[in-house]
Image (cartoon, rainbow, N blue to C red; front, side):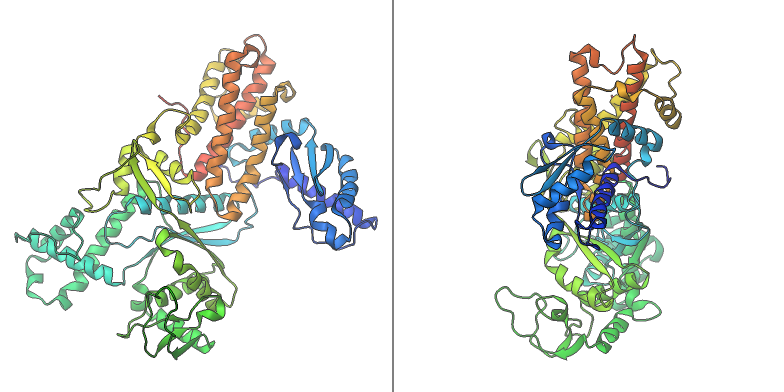
Length: 597
């Protein structure tokens, strides 16, 4: 994608004109000076028959202006009707203003797309603000499964979206390598080590990881240590076996992520918080204690549902209720070790210390109850200077022709991410994981995501891009000099007479292209990459509909052999569509093919 500076998109331009209309009324005394205009929005109307855009300006300013919304709307409308971009302005309902733009506006949008190519839609709304997006963070105890897959894709697409919208993004993975689960991993790997030395280990005991994926770890330990570990007590062999197992699992996880074209900038070890140059968990607790946010006390017995970390004893507590949580939270366990929450506070403090005031964590559905306490902790350790948005990704139901998929033999009790990617490809996995809002349960049918039909969104969108290039190839009968290189082709088509685009379906497609930059900004601000996937499907649908209409009505075909001017204009429209489809697919981490078989 080009890194050229983003230009102001059409919705932002119209919003600026609404602001100017209001400022002009203030100068004339019809509005009080210094009104807050940030609440004004310009957006597509819910009903396309109402116009091209709608604004709430009169509705949000009426109270401060001490005026009825419709009366104020009349004054704003009079200003807007004089604007050279606006064809008409009408008042709807209690005071909403519907705007219809002049036809040449849409041709200018197409010229913008041709000039900027895949960079069209790039935004400066992030203003270079640093954002830390932490996602996946799966325990390093085995291969990644389908549930991890959705969080991985969501986090990666969100990071790309934020970057495209002008934020400075760091992609981070938090390695949970300090809890009891990694000691279980080590004991499981030690069992496979004994197996590699020729011992018959029989059935894997309950409580240990049964998957065959640990066999290579056992073999590596046998090759490195021979039988020497057998002669040592667990306290001596556990650290070495644990380190080897974690390193091998993380290498496997990186490979699983690479299969989805996901690469993190930072892998942060939980163990480093307590085994580095300093005990950063202790430092964080001391920091909070000095602020009065940590104390020694007892928690009252929980009312209703049990609190999982409740103990009836004097303990070190974080004053979470002072920052919006329901109950104060323990920081140390009865054995003197830190709670997972204590480590989490220290970890998020390191993000703040590294310059991140804007943090996004992507968590699985089972962590919903953990959000309030972590947000409370971040308010405390950053004195309210940082924000954390936690995005929950719901479960994935893996199906094949509507039937649940059987578990993996290799992993033992789940279907691995790699198995799914190997079967249907990373494009299908990524797009379909994003074609539903993150907090809704997702049915992922392995048979349906490879169908070549409108019912398969990833195929339909990619086919839209490929269809555009098919049209270019056919158009060389009319324009033998139509360039193959993207930039040269955009220059060639940029001189087309756009006014030759006259059909309502063509104009509708231009309106859809104009909506893309606003969709990017709204999706980035809301942390909702699924909006891009939805938009791409709608754009592809309109493009396919226009192609079908041309098949039935020859005068609407993209290529008219005896009319080079209309052909050039329609090829420009096709170029606009493929540029935006390619841009959106790139944001989502999905390929934009130029042909499909």
